[in-house]
Amino acid sequence: MPAAGGSAQRLTAYEGEEKFPHISPDGRLIAFTAQYDGNDDVYVISADGGEPARLTYHPAQDIVIGWTADGGEWTFDQGVDYFMKEGGLDRESATGEAAGAAATPGQKIHYTLGKWQIERLLGRARDAKGEAFSLRAFHDELLSQGSIPLSLAEWAMLGDDSGYREAVRLGEAGD
Image (cartoon, rainbow, N blue to C red; front, side, top):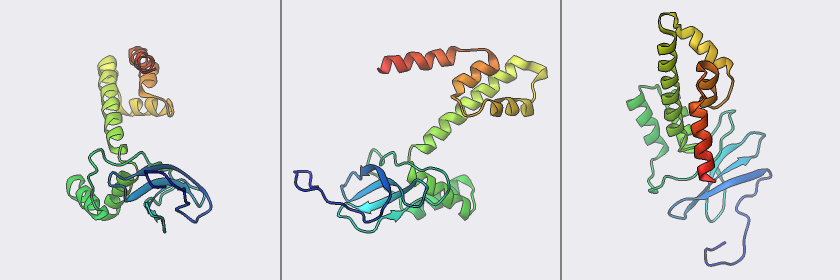
């Protein structure tokens, strides 16, 4: 529908669930998550409608978060080249990383933040255990926690609930 108002029209012709639409900063494209074949994948389509282009092809669930804040663009090939050059990846791995970055732009910063949190937990565990520290035991204990926030893993592994309490405080402050 035009921004000024008017009649809504369907842009796609596929059956399946379509959700999380995000219009590009220039208004030309719409990125969205769709479940056409049993798995949530990311697609992009012209704002005028037409054939959606599938951007992700792996079994994990992919959800569109949005576009870059500045409206900046890289071609997919530029993304692949970046991961090959800066990450030292082969083309196949770089293609997978570029697809992930294109599908969920915030994923890379979330990955980095998670990595820093795990490295912090590793350092605290190493300090707490001293000579008895074992990297293998640390990994086993961390993975045995399952998929929980790292503040809860820190509490379980080190008996320190300060990270959890801070997360709760921040959550309450945001309400």
